[in-house]
Length: 320
Ligand code: AR6
Ligand code: MG
Image (cartoon, rainbow, N blue to C red; front, side, top):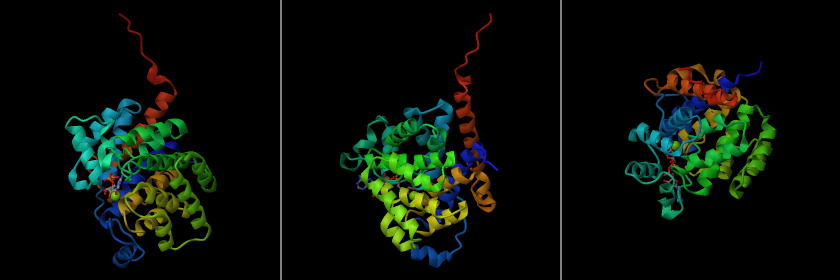
């Protein structure tokens, strides 16, 4: 049975949040420590999500409200939603403070890290709404992935990592076969380090590598180039949502973010129905909890096809 696009949209957002919440209590653990605490059976504990999901919510809200990208508004959404307890990266935290104090959202991120900008994975971890909303237009997808990243991540590798994650989600929504996906990603991605990592993914998949080799070759850190390829690999290696996300989190390191990115691609590929019920039920509820996240996915779907059919441009004539 063909999956509905709506279930892929909601699956990408809920999948990202579930992966984040699953990995959150383990952030910074090494692979061995994850194993010694959980064995092979990683359970969702509190269901609380982190900055990954809080920022993803802001991206979705802004795309929905503006029927597309508006950088100033997206930055404002990040600031409105911000809660320090969600454990933001130091770069993103500083950028949001400076924008709140009046600096321009377009330039401030480029001033961090000695004027080089951040190449952390913070732009990639929140990109799922962009990946689904522009899934059918590669050029537009790249443009909006870069622009939405620029708010916090000025470094080209931070933006390219977000674009690579967005392309993976888009191909998953399209239902591209897994082998073809890797080939397409190699064509689309621009920077050398990501092309190299995609080649490594292919080699690792061929030999069913052990976790140590995967961490050594692809990484499990906070840098976009040491985590986005790891999420793509985790998705490609398994045949279901649960196995992919458990594997990603089990690698240790930046567990919440690698879990979130693997969950986003897997949710977009398999649809919402493939996310274990137990995990969805445990995911926090409340004002911006699981029901709201699902609704954001439904709204993105509605807005997307509303625009596509040009109904949005229809302005009724006044009769008076
Ligand atoms: N030079 C050196 N180190 C860098 C550079 C650079 N140009 N850019 C990034 N780093 P940040 P994020 C390192 O702070 O990407 C949260 O827990 C540096 O060590 O921009 O928003 C999220 O859940 C920096 O602190 O944060 C993510 O898991 C780190 O990369 C994670 O943090 C992260 O960059 C990243 O979030
Ligand atoms: Mg993280």
